[in-house]
Length: 459
Ligand code: FAD
Image (tube, rainbow, N blue to C red; front, side):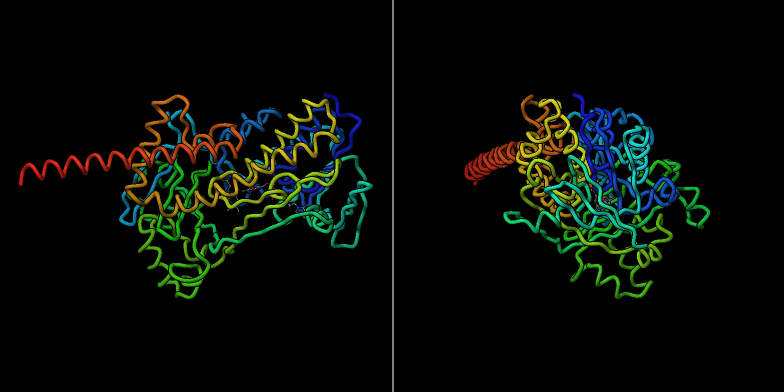
């Protein structure tokens, strides 16, 4: 496929936009990539604390297309399962994949973005523009208007416009002004806040008492996504390559055990709250209260819209089309998958954007909806259900069936370690879970009846 006659304007040089720029450029397209923020490569984004993302098969498959999978994995930390921390500090490991062969990786968001931008910048026919905010789009021309805070503005014309400008997309905003465009946004009643666990060297410098250094330079098990499930709320921690962990609190905004409740406590009160609920983490979080007070509390939103295209020359990808809550670790991966599917469809139709754009939008929309639903369901599972024995038994049985029956895949495996379309994974998993509950129900009835028969014969 030769795209050298096509000029593609990508709005947003985040994760999806910069990956798509690489893939289009690889096929010869002239790409202009415009980003509202300043250049992260110059702004020293790297030096800051690492905010990390979980990445599995979907993300890696898309990266492989542009030859960046190995470069990204070089600094990634393997997370083959969840390590649950009970209130009393008891640890339970739950491997993710049915055969233990697959793993998620924890990758640094900033480093990933920089790697993609650097790769895009190696092509002469890619122009990167930073500090360049899209404020208007003309779908007929097609073109987009960009401006800077100093008053500079410019209209950029292109053959194709891709809105890769995230959950609060300016391209989508313009699409909303046209008739027949559907849009919804749903905020969770939970928000999130990031906290930090230093590595052992930093902990020692900060005067923390280290009783166990078996995971050095990490303060806890390195190869796991740590979860402190606490019913209506939870904390998670993902490892970073430098031995630190990035923790995220997912708490209700208001009410019991909420951000509002802890915000109102004194520092001692807040620390006591953490000791009560996350007791084993507190000793490795010496900057806990400072981080808690200084770091913002943000909201979580699911955004759905339809159609994802405007005619045959403008299309949305990633969060701009389908922002999902982060509980399946799939938002960025779904964005990457959009890029892969769009490119594969272009390859199938020899670069015919006019044919592919509407077809892509229609084919991908059910998958965007499916991962949005699955992400919310996984939130309930992570914060609550994984703390219940009956649920864990069902999960174990599901995994047992997956190991025994070749056609059986757990939902987690399908979502995280395959490229099965999300909508198909959701449908298959629903049927399988029904079978799991049915079998367990039948076993329960048989065992109860046998027990009653034994008791009758005894008495
Ligand atoms: P973004 O990465 O948001 O990029 C959009 C870009 O557009 C930004 O650079 C922005 O500055 C730019 N932009 C915005 N408006 C304009 C404008 N008007 N003009 C020009 N540029 C503009 N996903 C995973 O796969 N795994 C995870 O573990 C994971 N964890 C997460 C944890 C949290 C707490 C959250 C909130 C999200 C998480 N996600 C995760 C989701 C992931 O961050 C997003 O889905 C992903 O960043 C989407 O990529 P994108 O390129 O579509 O949008």
